[in-house]
Length: 228
Image 1 (cartoon, one colour):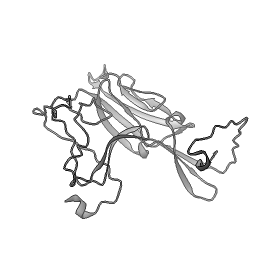
Image 2 (tube, helix red, strand yellow):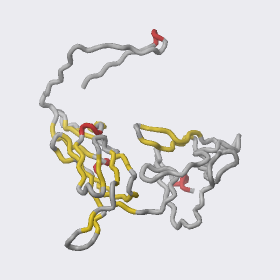
Image 3 (cartoon, rainbow, N blue to C red):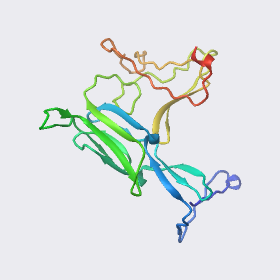
Image 4 (cartoon, one colour):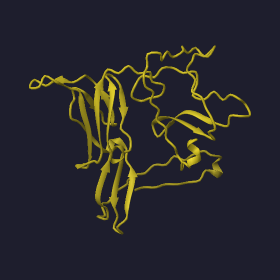
């Protein structure tokens, strides 16, 4: 590991440029029991329309140090070798982006279409914990904010209205290469998609939809009173 740190107080925030003529890393033999993982080491399943892509997240590598302590670090996708079990359904590139390429092929013995693919990975020849089983589907979805389906345009992800009452800050941002909606000081918020005048957005017609799915990530402890 190579670390470099320098303050920029005397340069008014301007950074430094420096060159290294030679750098050598030595294998000291103090790291053992490597345990790579994708998707946080979990076996996950999902389905997506043909032509859509989703990035694999939760890529880590865990080592046991000489003092017996386990240390887990975030690993970039380039360290991993990704494999798909069914290239007729899904492929995965060197950056860990899974793309649903087709509906699959018919099994000549059963006459059933195999529309699933299992995405696995290894690092340094060691199989990573975790996998993604993805099924090609033809799903009628109205997606507001997703990496799996095409999204419809919305008026906004935070209207910032009711001045003096709403405290919520934030909206759609990028975090570690992932698109997320991040709210702070949340008391109430609205994602508007009804085609507000002047927004240039068409109202979303969900008349024929039957189900609604929402994913929420909470970055703090949830007390019983928070669920009211």
